[in-house]
Length: 392
Image (cartoon, rainbow, N blue to C red; front, top):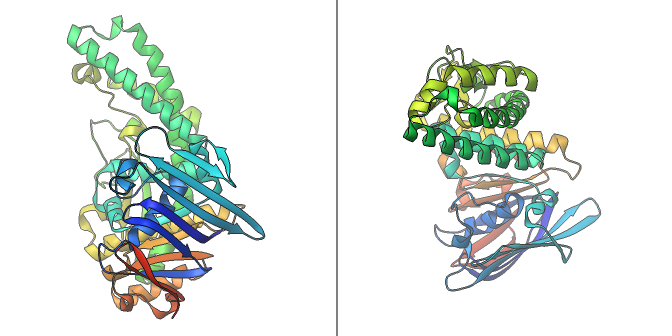
């Protein structure tokens, strides 16, 4: 799949923009703050209904405007699709495909992209919540129905936490909380499916991450993934902290049935502490994805360059998993301000690693930071305007 044309109206600093895109690499060049990242953010939103930069949609609407419109002409083989979304400052967003209205949540099934941005360094150095979100977003791209499972789990978790807080306040203890057992079963049913699905995904990602990291960093670097499962932990931990000796780090997938049994036992084990604290202490909302480099935890041990390369490897592995399962071709690969952070050898290796993708979109402040092989179609951006477009 590729984007042949992008149109923006009142999106970020663009009053309007019309941009033709080519197969293969497309390079957006402009000084910081000119709007090059806004272009790829728009396409990222079209495929995920979220921004990698802000948590609220209205931040992407041009100042003093009521709505922003993203419209993209998509192509795969001989099939063309016009996908568009209107982001409203007030009221629900609206989406169309080929000029026919659809539910906004259905839009991502028509367009798939994988975006790497500087913010993704937090996948390696940040908190477990970011790594959980990374896995869950990829789960939804692969299996859209998982969006409902994740939403239902969050709802049950909130209701269960409310009940625990109420019990703590009133001094009620476990034997009197028959209602809690009902929420336990819902939590176990939904949570077990999430845990098993994440485990299957990590199993697929692991060899891809190892290969992608080696492709970027060169031989002799072993990157690996493992699941930290809070339901296997004997302690009250928020994350694995990268300690692979902990029994809660699982390299083997559990079936949904096995997970459910372990989950129930874990809830029983921590019941007293949960009632004391008024919060659910085990489940997929407390799990982590442990990243190791040469058998050491990447978080805390990896250098800046190694962390950057690991985060890149995670995104390249995501793209590889999606392309293997897609009937619509490769996801569009988006690299936002990547090359300035890499040394010359890693720039060249990254260029080699992405050259076989159907379409790659790259942003850079300085054109010389990007290997010549990726400067096939160059677009210059200045102050929210496309000032020059063409081959160079």
